[in-house]
Length: 117
Image (cartoon, rainbow, N blue to C red; front, side, top):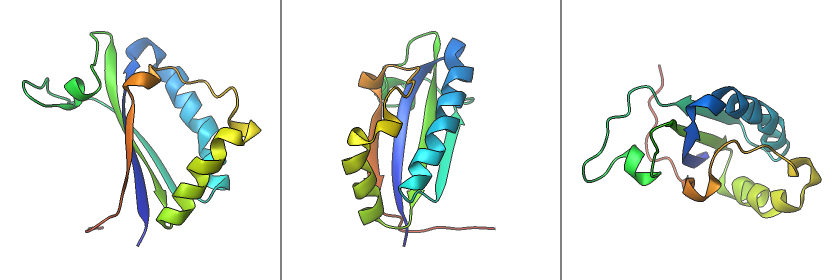
């Protein structure tokens, strides 16, 4: 079964276009390492949390929106290889990250159920 790398991050609303462009530029690089899907989702209905919430997790500021995204890989080994090698790959140098990377979180996930229409 495939493997998912998920991301949650705050992006200034004024930098939405720059973020989309950054995602477009990064997709071919992730494909080069074997990624089979890349999805970026801009928050539209993200309720403010009281105890937990997407907004609290990323310490969202008033001028920011939450982005939820993922990369699908054929397997964990492919994802691990990408993340081990990408820091030394000159193609990733200078990638614009129009957000505060210190408040981004990510993790790897093994799917346990998938429903598709």
